[in-house]
Length: 254
View 1 (cartoon, rainbow, N blue to C red):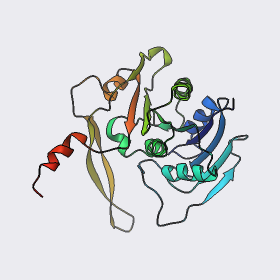
View 2: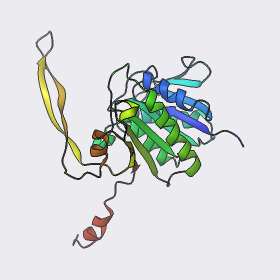
View 3: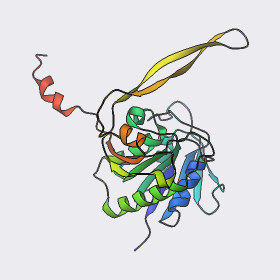
């Protein structure tokens, strides 16, 4: 039986420690192809490049890994990877390991998770991994174990069509991890504000800032479990339909 084909990307750029750790976790698990952004692309969400060309070129940065740098977004990278494979379908798509969590509604902004959602759109089992440490030199040793454990399980069990997994790992020592929880996405939002500044020429510009906070008291969410040192797994889907509202809208006299 041939080894699985694994397509890898991220949103922190091909030089990040997170993606190197991700490769280390699964490099002997299957055949790897990597297409990653040539620079950080955090916060790009599901953006694609439609008004400018995309450049994609081979890199030997990862030694024996079949790797490409892409000037596009994380979603562009997945699309490009599928194009480069010329019809050969990956068995698994992995994105990350992100520097910083993608808990709750951050999934909507995250390039890491949008790459995984793009994989789900293509009908491919996909996982996005994030560690709650924004440091460039974050310690991914324990995260590698989680990556491997869940990737092997998805290869073995598969995923429901149209879904992907959002995995968040707390930034604590392995001896402090309480376990792994499959759970729902919590309700939390950014309270946005803009920092008004002036450039050296005296012209105005604005820097988006704000704080992220939970808006619920329930304890069965990724927010709560992550804060209490559990690895969280949230099954996510691209279908944004509010199905229970469809019948209500049909009653409208339009």
